[in-house]
Length: 328
Image: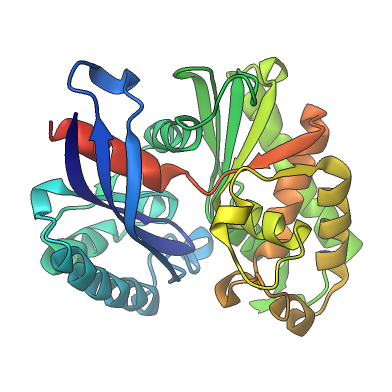
């Protein structure tokens, strides 16, 4: 058995997250098929809205870059405190930085702060990391494969089907931030309680994206739907009626379709202050949770899924897992 200490950073459209962990793997195992055991040393998240306005302007906003760089400086201190060198630190950048014209400015800023060049990965690579992080702990006796992993991000949503490894994947631009900016704002101002027409517009985009996904991912084969990222984990926490966010209780919670429908209707009819008052709601998610909930609900209805399994382990864990294996 060997143990590797690694740092993984996932910088998405809405949030930037850090995981410092020790991964123990078997010396006799080989390649990507290893399962290993991750032990968290530090896990944290900040809402930086890197993707602010990207869908409209095609560029990363100066204030969004500065928020992201400020978070990177704080993360650099954490990584150094655990003694993780740059060669065992991996920074993955997803949808917003992949789409932006000025992504080179983002890349050079991160390199200066962390000493690591961010990898602006493709949607397929993002899907592979998400699948690894979400499924390596799933026991087939409890959760039936094949799994459909759905990672609802800020700019895009990944669909990944597989059992022990990825069999098919697709990334589509239906993230919660992108859909909020596209359909739930008027003249740049968020609609506090969306109109029926706005809700229909979000659902239409999601339905069209699902048609696209279905061309390459056989969605009907899935036996277990696994939901990742902040929208899904927040809905899981609300479904459990938690007084405070508790990832250990939320992880692997099963939320039935009827409950997701009830929660979506509740959020859509709530005011900004009412959503903000929900104990498990992160302040940075208040404005985009409506679009995210509509994405999940529309997916579940399309699949005929009776429930979603909420996973706290996602692309961030997949990044850490692959980083440790690459260093062996």
